[in-house]
Length: 328
Image 1 (cartoon, rainbow, N blue to C red):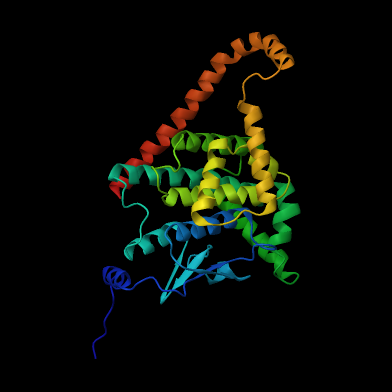
Image 2 (image 1 turned 180 degrees about the horizontal axis):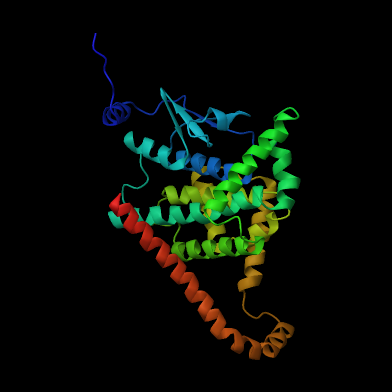
């Protein structure tokens, strides 16, 4: 008998004909004792996307989830006969079934959305990897302990060393390994400011309904709030009030409740942001600001140059991404 081989287009058509089943499982590492900041951000983003689409799923935690994944990354979903990992392939998989959060977006808006998602990947993901695996304080206090917790000794030590070497190799190729922690935090702040400017006063990045970009941003912001270690505080301080409000809107639409610790951190982050942006409040503060006025005038040109560099950085990145996605 002749053999029949299914092409990608035929598989896509067959996939689109089948409804979303009720027994979909999302596999990820253990939340309490194992998962690290970058993986937690990815898992929360996928969970938020599925909830925004009202697609049923059940979280299945496995110590070896990354080794079960077809791409070696978490999370991944098992939907019928299909196994799909990471946010963007899962977004496309859901779209093939007729479920999409981008139906109202124009071609230009879709390209812009992908550009901002690329910005998050190029900055926040690399920063999270750097802090988790390169920064010695976080690596020794958090990463080494959590990553090796599910393995017997010396397997945990060997696996952690191998994974750290792989992450360092990736960051070296992307010219992130040579950065200092201050430079990494500055990049995170610049990225958050750019995303905050795009969000503005809107509920979501593109109008009144969420998109995959909102799910991705929610995952990273909440993962940062849940992070631990010496760099957790400086990371949280980089989150703007606009992005915190966006986080709370996504919580409401996904019905993913915050823990008591997260609620406290959100409150503290709001207070830090207010102190950073609030106008003069007391006579003593006014007098202090008067004394510093000359220094402010001297630094005004420097601030303008810094602001313009932020805008140039963002515009250049988005333009390059738009050209790339149009060509693809």
